[in-house]
Amino acid sequence: MTAPTAAGPAALLSAVGADLLADREVPGMAAAVLRGPEQDLLTAGWAAAGRPVEAGTRFALGSLTKTFTALLLAAMAERGEVDLQDPVAAHLPAHAAPRAPITLLELATHTAGLPKLPPNVFRRGARHWLTNPYRDYRPQDLYRATARLDPHRRGRLRYSTFGFGLLGQALANAARTDYPTLLAERVLAPLGMTNSTCATPHELLPGAATGYHHGHAAEHWTFDALAGAGALYSTGPDLLRYLRAQLRPESVPALAAALTAGQRAWVRPERGPNEQALAWNRRPAGGRTLFWHTGGTRGFTAYVAFSPEAQAGALLLANSGPTLAQPVLRAGRRLFAGCLGEER
Image (cartoon, helix red, strand yellow):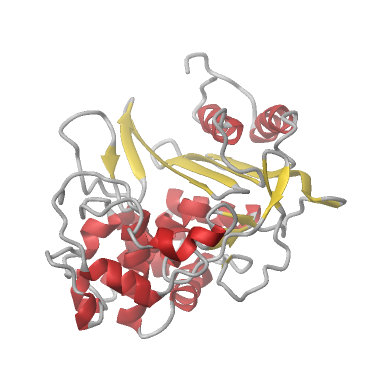
């Protein structure tokens, strides 16, 4: 990223969107950029055969859901319902307590020492591993896996879907409700994200795009116990509201403190420039701070990045699953670079 660009949001979106949709494996997309007072949203391509992508088209966010679970944690901590330093065992049934203490903050910063996935998720999801791997993974399965935990790498960054699924379940237990309801009431409603919802095992997803993997339609992923790690579906306009809130927390008074806490550098590794916020990847660069997170299911890819100091950000949703070439993520990074006044 070197040369500055004068392209406005609309021109930037048009150029990047045209290049992305030229890839035959990317049927449709929703993208947006924010730069100071300027913003624009683009929907293009096909949500399904014969159905174009529209403002209300839902896309799977995959692991981008983790940033919402982290925001939920910060919001509940602000209200005094939980504490970041609470041991997760305080919000689980007694029989699910891990063998070593693990805090909610460690779960939210990938420093709890948990593996990427619960060991018993493969047995539960084997029949549907290539189509919908987490749909049959229940709270009792999560509790059994958690009770067997004996973390040996606490304090070191280790990305964990297991950890965020456990965090979402613990927060739901603390509030005496289920994760989709809790997220909708405490996070999505204050943000005005009225067209966003969690994909649960027995719920239809009206308005959702069809996901594609290497050109073939893919089954929607649904979640139960691991909902906090990847269950959210959202639209371009809703995710744009989320991006605006990250850049201007004061615009959402009910979540302002939580949004700010979520961007704090909670973990600074000994090596490398990247830091760990609550779920967000974070990096100081050139006098400003860059935040980003990605998500993917078999049929969808998502990307969000922003810089509060630059008052700039970008998002990209596509109904195409991750591939080795990663055209969606490369396009998302190009959008963000353009928002920052750079070319990639």
